[in-house]
Length: 396
Image (cartoon, rainbow, N blue to C red):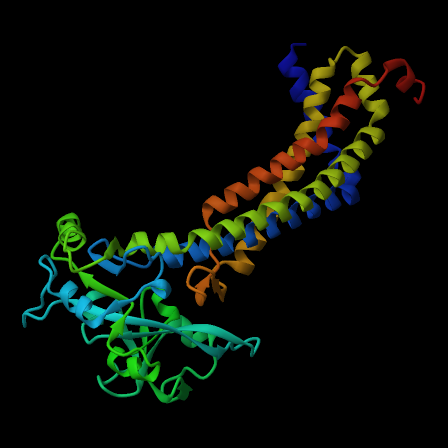
């Protein structure tokens, strides 16, 4: 009998004996499934946040900040500087000749979350009338756009879902002014949906900002026009600015939180994984112990130790894959698309987003389950291979 035939025969006997150890095998499968659920759920937070941030932006859209600023919160531009930026060559113009450029303010206001009732930092953005021309993917889905010069605001769809009292017709008070919600806008699931928008000229006196802004959002004539436009601004002696594409800016904004979440996720998964490995070890030791005479008989008939080792590892792999599939399926059903909000530590504001259980995360969960199963089955497999044939046969 050749080696491969021995492997197939012994593995078949091992797998057919699983129902006889249903209790212990079920515990092992549940333990591994639990690890995969937690691992996938935690990392889906990072994936969902990354998708919301990276889904924000068009390569043709550019953000101009004060030089040395990495966020709008730390940037500041005078009204004169904002005017010079909007007059630079290379900016897209509408049929009426108006440039598609929007000098903007970004302030943080306190507002309660729907679920907890605790106050959260909500981004309130003051924009110019050209803001929707700069971001053509955005559209009003309920109510209407605010009228310039009035204390009216429009709210992102995600913000309306996550925060209390942000429905059309609601009245709110921030700063020195009262505000009326007149519309809700959709931004394709991007981070902009976590924001509230109003007229920048109204927001300036409400927060005593004078004639100042924090950024200028603008749309270029073409994607290829970025470098000439950037060179025109950075070489202008009257300006001291940083020019960055919108997708690149929001990708940078997501890095800190993604790193934190992923680090926490891997630590939690590692700790739980140790427990799952011990559970698999106990299960496989129990399997080997219950099959001592069977293994000894096979060895006495001429079966080698290698096929015995492979048969034990095959059982461990099968159980771990079952746990991985169950855990991944439950994680996808429970968390994919779940709406929540978290703090973006680079802008100190809440970002609403949806958990994203991606195929890549499901694959990682399955691989981690397989690794746990194989590690848990290694020592029992070695014990089975080293089992003294004479001693085991005495139990017959």
